[in-house]
Length: 418
Image (cartoon, rainbow, N blue to C red):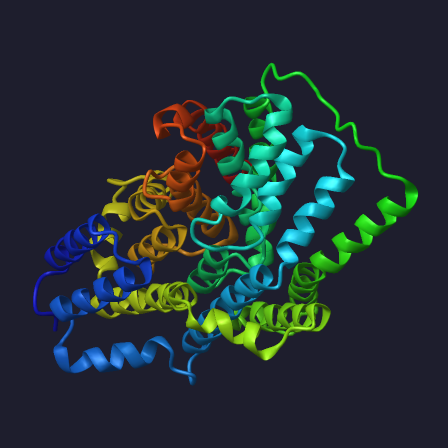
């Protein structure tokens, strides 16, 4: 029996969440503290340790799924950090810049390539490269900032080792490959609208530097070497999903794939022990991993406390339109938390037991939370990019808002038509 009514408990928990967001506390800490506070209010205190254990109980399917997602998140963050520490991401960016003889194309690709590293505020890594290429087109600072921000975030909806995507698949029980298939049209729309808005009325300029055959071959070799860990991860993920071994239901497909990518990176970079251990000294790798666990803990707490009972009658009698709920709740929560994981975790926890998580539902929850996060003023990439290019966020929103609306409209079309 809960200590207080579910409605009061949820309101109190969300008030605490708001305070922690205002204080800019790490999202991993926020999700776990909110879950434990909600449990304190709505669950018999003697059962709280049981809730915590049940979240990662290896004897249950949900528990094994949570364990695999948390471990995969840790390995992904380790892979990302080592990509940077070994200089492989720089090699990847430079090889692309040499191979593509078009500043507009380079500006579209480079931030997305850096986006392969899913680190907080990662747009700051691509900003210097974007700045150099953008000067060739004489772009204004606000346009440079928009291009850097928007194109960095075009890759994640179809990137199989994106943490928010993994968490979404884990929480909803939908295979990552099925979610990705529904995101392809949205990504294409994001790229097209980004190119049109980012380079509207900007004359085409070509690089004057021409590469000879040997230089082209050398750049291609550098590209494939630098890209091979990411490629290995993607290929292994899809191969395991297609193999029908049932690994995706427990999240082990992504875990094994990221380990494969990590092994490839270690081999091709000839990584030494000192560099390998460096990411373990960074809080970032643990903060994101903690967020993955917090997402599952919050869901388990919501289920145990029977929070879904608040929303079931509203949906059953038609008081709340389910599609509207799938659109607004994740987008607003992603916007407020400045985190797609936070938006997805909170939304799925609220809706768990209320509706069936089909691929189309899971995809809409994910993209709603993701696009809400992308345009959030609390989004680190947004603030870092505006600061780097010395422009206000208000000027960036002139480009970001139309891009957001068109991308969201595409997601809705996919939901209703397929």
